[in-house]
Image (cartoon, rainbow over all chains, first blue to last red; front, side, top):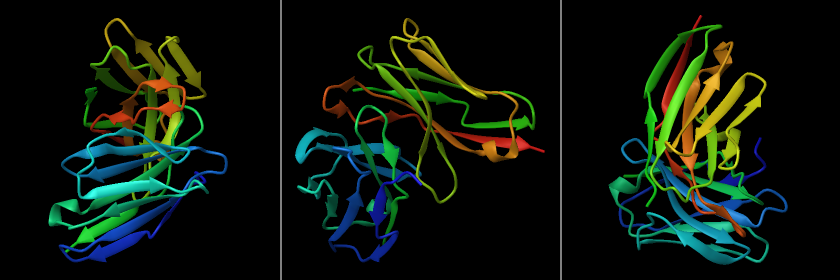
Length: 110
Length: 115
């Protein structure tokens, strides 16, 4: 167990809808990262938050957004969902360079 | 941006033999190189990492080597066991104060340990 908690584990929703994925980092970790894993794109970095502030953006679509709250948990919001957004979404947390991943949320858009 | 290439995509070895997975990176500013193991239905698990000021690091049956000049790094697993079967990912990033940049991952290697 990495200590990073993601909810929900599975999510099925329809095209055009909006969903929120939640991540609780390891105790004491200030950094939260979001990644998307799909068969065609592999593991891709989406966004990094450090102590509540956005630090870096990767290949994150404009329809997607994230935030990190004062208690350091983070949420990834996905809107106007398309079939191609179906993927595993991982959250990772770190205090230094080492990033520890949660078990992921499997999103299926139908 | 950074680009990480990983080979092979599939590697089958006999139990007890060694396995080697190789990666190259493109951004000379990258200074942190972790390796992750992912089992079916689970998140990536950090198994070993190396920083650019070190050429080699070992942890029991696992070792990683880094050649900064050639921009490549490798994972070596000795005395392979059935529980080593998984998908392995290499990654690269720039680590500075306030955490590392997001990791750029290779495409993964499916390691199969034959009994």
